Length: 73
Image 1 (tube, rainbow, N blue to C red):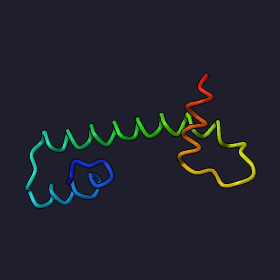
Image 2 (image 1 turned 120 degrees about the vertical axis):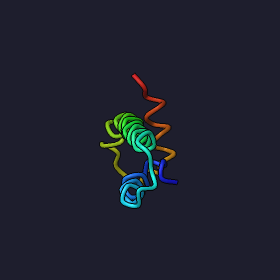
Image 3 (image 1 turned 90 degrees about the horizontal axis):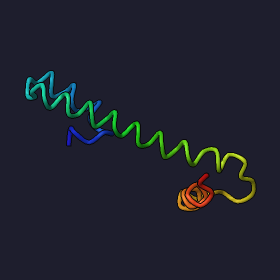
Image 4 (image 1 turned 180 degrees about the vertical axis):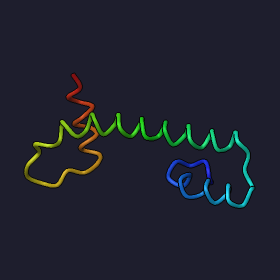
């Protein structure tokens, strides 16, 4: 569980404090968190410009993703 990117920033320091973790596990958790940040940033950078000028009804995540993919440059 401590390698999952949303939980790693909380779980890894706790495991370090308990002395229950090795160096490669810390490095792996850090790499996974950075990788997740890059993926999420890439996805949101495609969605945001396509949906910022949306007016009217509330846009669902599915519609926003379809809009971003469909109007790909």
